[in-house]
Image 1 (cartoon, rainbow, N blue to C red):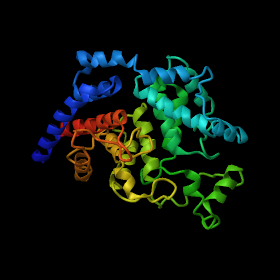
Image 2: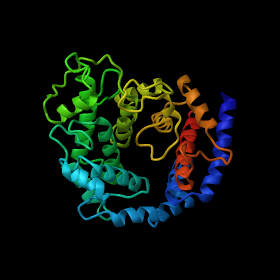
Image 3: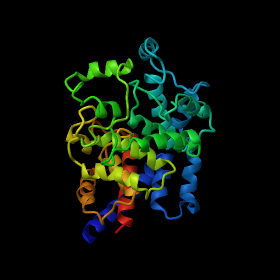
Image 4: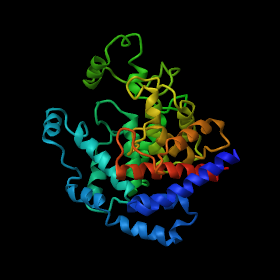
Length: 352
């Protein structure tokens, strides 16, 4: 173990020095946040925080955000959206989630530009049960509610009762194995009456309201979806729930136990290879996202299940000391990936 810690600490030292030299302000801000015990007193941290205000990608997103809280989408996607039920079903909502995610990472709050209009629009779609419908189906999708929860909280809405209502709905949907799934697909699709129906046809009649959801969990013994669970935990971690909460830890246990394994559900990243794909943003889950959440929640060297994933992360580092996007390297994206990887290693090392 000491040898591995020495290796980790050396990687942190060398790669952090390189990253801090070239990274844009928000990347430096978050890396320093994890590196320093008292970041608010460090001049480098204060400078990075100030420079985030003039970070061009952030300013461009704010400039393109309309007074109605939406960003423009392509004409083709707008036509498709208008032909259906409209937002939150379609690309308008997807675009809002993705851009708000980027704004949150760049230290933006609800009080800037029209961000407040965007978060109010999202919360205006909330159902009486507590979830935000869409973006693709007429039935609730826990993974996108975790995504929305993360954005709303990061942008400064964490104390809003409507946001707490999303948290409560997600926790109510947690299954006995600690994880989450798309409730209709888990609880109803595999019942004898529907299990031989093609997924497209099943989805169609559910969206038309022909199959009522009773909340019965007749198939609770079937494992939850790894990636749905990861997206939900990502949202809950950003919220007001204590990171020692057993419900959060049970969710994390599910994807820690499933690390490098095939997902049970064909609807969401079934292949084992998805674990080792490096990408940013991480909102659809990956091995990198899993380790980010796990180390934040306190899973460290004392848990032998963490050893193999941490060694994989060390081995995924490029010769230049950075971690690079798996599909095709990209200078700025790779700096974000490297920041996440280093923050994971910093937290892990401190737990020895």
